[in-house]
Length: 575
Image (tube, rainbow, N blue to C red; front, side):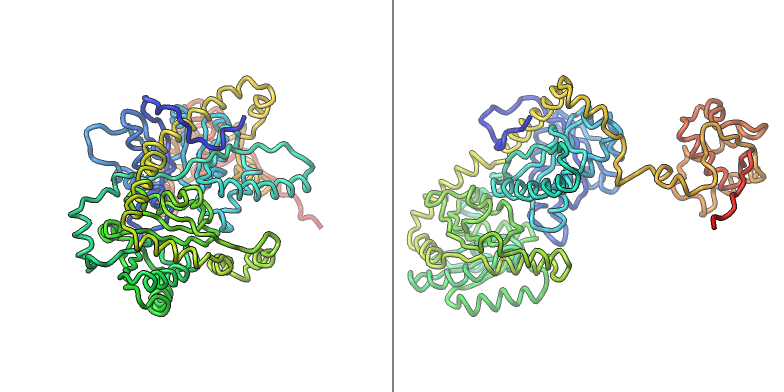
């Protein structure tokens, strides 16, 4: 029951309001952190689109932390109509099952699939989205899907065909290893639809006055052409600047025009900052190079407004999609990008801009790098850097493409207009959210139809209710205690009964002791005061659930408020 690979369809947008549960932590959605990453920009854009689509519907915030729910509420826009929101602190099954879909802003769908088990593997759908696929963590999330309780009505969204091909390769090898270890088990995987990231195109509309103000603020003269790069300023983990630097230098000399390069982003440390700035001075001395702090919204917006053309020579395996070229197209800028990963799906060569050919070593030549990374001989940054160093650009094509755009303002205008049109018709969040809604509905249909498939129905009914990686501690360590407390265990009053309040209020026992739990403990202690009673009878008399009664009796015994009526014989030590 596969979901279509490309979930961006031509179907009209559903009219009903979106109902969705979000796994929410600020790091996945907020833009105010010290390290602004692409995944946060994407998460924030999705959040804004989801809030708009859920107006009149439901947007549940799933987080164990009250402070995270407070951050969620702060991110909600102030307006007359808004979604109905609620805090779901413990992935409460009934609330999520009612809306039907749980979304997580990353590829980590295995863990919430485990948390779904107590409610049934078909209780709701889980949808995640890929970002980088190169890190060991990302690879572990991907290969972990083979043993996680994910189902065909779950989905891991691939933001590009490049991501899908990577996942197919990695999952195929992992499945082969699993089959080698265990035979040939039937493996249920989530759907892997392709839905690109989106942008809010209206965010990149600039008036002529705003463009003029931005250029004045950056000290740009009327006869200067501005090439813009936006993104993290990292030569080992984002885009190596050397091809851009030497191409701009060649274009400046070939055209005789004044060029300005604005790099809007942020440096991880001073050493990287020096490398970028020293490299710019050495390799493009004819180009005036400016840097803007891309973490500051006003500086980032001014950089977009001041640009004449956009350049991004992505060459890194941790890149998967490329959000900034779409933002550049939405801003009406012609784009010059590397023919790499998801970039090649975004930019139409010689229509929206230019794609520059890239070269990299063939499969089979990176095994040693992979082993060094796996063994910890190199870290992730070094792994990315060493692979990036072997990705080559066609320098002549890059310099010629930039020169064409520098010489020809009409070409810049035409390509910018084509790109802007493409951004609005294909990548605006109003379009992308429609694809998400179609996906959520399709996964719900798969979940419903699966109930009539005997093979899947049997699988669902036999599914475990707990994750083996997060076992019931009283089951996994059942052999530790001398006695196991059961519903039949006899409980009598202990000498600590008279000082129960004092004991419970001690800092030794207040951890996790809510008012409701304290009341339950007092009720159990009172019920056991007169005669020994089985735990089951204490539960009946107090009205507490059996689980709460067993746990409560155990806690009271630790405080010496109750004791167990039957004795224990300690067996002799084994020889």
